[in-house]
Image 1: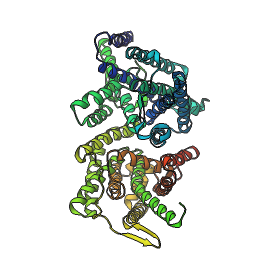
Image 2: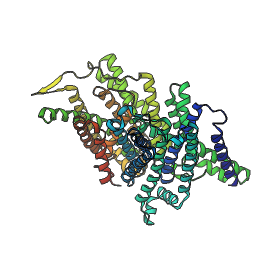
Image 3: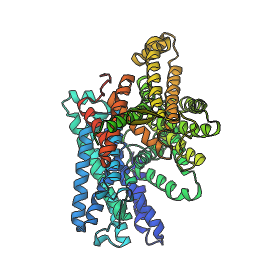
Image 4: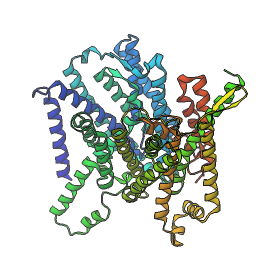
Length: 339
Length: 288
């Protein structure tokens, strides 16, 4: 265990060092904006990862929460309101939308939850698309300004890095708290938790509020990065990509969402210059990950380390065989929590 | 706004759109009822059916041939998807759904590569031409034909499900997979068959629907969402529910588009939310 912890600790320090040093080692503004996009997508994916990994609730409308928050900030900015009010409006809309999602979905689970969130995401998309006096319709809202203290590109970049570290730490803490443990209990056996006296819908609602708030924060940051918001940010496609990021990186891992976000953003922005059919590539990667590496990139890496360690301590083969009997095919909900 | 002709026309619009929705939703709901999979590639199957239908109808001018081509190609695609991909994740809810998402990504992108980004519609020469006239109301025969097809397929599905041996096997599979496989039925192939039939229904919907709504990139998500809403309202797994839900959503959509176009999405999802809160299993869904 200590070695695993040393490895993940070292990885955190190294990643952080690279992130902090990036502007000093001559990264171009293109690279910085790419990294910023990855950080925001990673934050959004982390919020979904918390929901899927701990509560077992796979939301297919999560992108729309971020979009609603972004629209709140955009509308406030267009009205000429000051940044503080902008943030407050974005936060308020995030809370209201998350609450609506939570209330409507807290009694459902599994496939039904998936469909309810999908449909709610479409409501947000529909409103963004049609309610054009407020949302600007298909053109969206552009020219949204960020507050002055993070007006410079490098201050904003460091602000993003800080925000990412903070929310990741926050989600990790919540996940390791008694609340997180109860969520995992509900995920694994709803009936047992209910008979133990837990209010399952209340816990689900709570989980959704936490996840939704983080998603809304990421939405606000994305609007500050791109100065622009349009209906497509609320579309199904974005929410599907978020799930792709989470699965790709590894459900229930702390850094999986970031790695998954990096892969998806790079495929979308860099590979798309080389390969015209990049959505096909992305779809195929996704299918292959689900079929052969269900634990995702980070999860598979952890498994590999675990296997190597077991071989090093030279215990007889049974554990290794057990690993082979349940290959990467273990259901997503049964994954345990490792960095 | 409230003249009889207007009301009759919107009602017919609603019914013909509802008929299309039924073709889509019945396949989705049948597959779910038996296999417990929500096939999110259903819209992509509709898309293939639509594109192929338009191309074949353009070449031959024969609607039946267009439908058949779409059905065959989609059935083969669905067969491959089921046997090569879905079998490996059988019984695992989330991976199953996500695999179909991946399939939908790939199909939609390949369709874009092959057919381009422009909207495709069924050439009017291939469909049923002319309009029906009753008093002041004129209405295209093609849309009446769509309603007729949907009713015929709906009746056929119900008869097959309740009156034939195949239907009995499927119903038994829905109720108790273990017992039906213990009785010597290879339930794996029943699953495959049902998945292929569901996809074929989507393909029929796509080809016929191309005469009402043009096929363009993004259509796969749009029709999938309508189908999901119908199925949630009607109850997953119920053909009757799919029929009632389709008519309901078709009518709501037609009148909402005419009266309050700004809120046209909202008016579909609001009833769905209501149903989910009051009766989470849908109007005709089973409470298990």
